[in-house]
Image: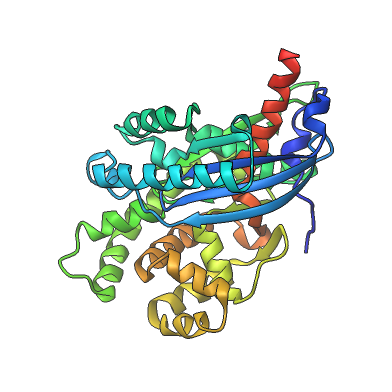
Length: 358
C-alpha cells in the first residue's frame, strides 16, 4: 500500500514564503457542498515544507442541492439552512479557535455553485462575515483535488475523480512543453450522489427501495452512455495507471465495506470490492445498521446517507469504474484527505498574495 504525506498541494507553488506564514498559524475553512457543510481547522507549522496538523474537522448534513435537479435553483428553505449553518460554524471558528478573520476561507463547491440563484446565498454570507465567498468551478475544484490528492511524482501517470453531491469532477495532467510544465485536463459529469438520487425520486410513485432500484436500473443505460462519452472525449486517461478517487460516495463505500477506521491518506481497493458492496447495500442493508451500533465510523456514514443515497452513490462509482478500459490493470485508491485539498491550496495562495503585498 502506498503511504504518502499529503504534500502535493504545497509543492505545486514555487515562491518565497514570508515569515508571517512560515510560523505556526491556525486556519479555518468552510466548504458548502451539495450534501453538507464541512468545517476544517488546521495548524500550519511550515507551509513551504508542507508541515501541518489537522486540529479539527466536522460536518453538518444539510442536503441543499435537491432543488437544483428540479428547476436549477436552490430552494429558499435550503438557502436559509445553509446560511444558518455557515454563520454558526463561522462564529465557532472565530470564538472557540481564536482564528483571525483573514485566515478563514469559505467556498461553495461546484455542485452548489451551479445553482441559478447561488448569488443570494453568497451576498448574505458576505454581509454577515465580510468574507468574499468563493464559488469554485468544476474545473478549479478538480485542479485543487489533483494538487491535494495525488503525490507529485504520480502526477503524469494518474487520474483523479471525485463523486460529490451535485456533480462528478476530476482530471489529469500531461507534460506539454520542454520545461515540463503540466497542463490540466478537466473531466466533469453533471451528476452526483444527491442529483442522481433526486432524479430517480422525481419518477417514483412510492418511497420503497424496490421501486427505487427498478427506476435506477432503467436509468443505467443512459448513465453508462454519458460516462462512456465522457471518457471518449478524454482518451488520454486510458493510459493512466493510477486512479485516485474521493468524495462522499467513495468514503461511504470504503468505510461500510471495510468496516474500520481509515487511517492512511491513500487506501487501495478493487472493482470487485465495489461490486460486492453494491449487492450488500441493495439486498442486505440491515447488516450495516447492525454494524453501526458497534462502529462509530459506520454510524457516521448511515447518519449522512440514507440507503437510497448510498445506492445512487455506488451506482455512480461502479459505473465510472466499469466503463474505464482495462480497469483491472489499474491501481485504484481512496484519498482520505480530499476534503482538505481546497483549503491547503487557498492557504498556499494566501501566502503568495502576502509575499506580493510585502
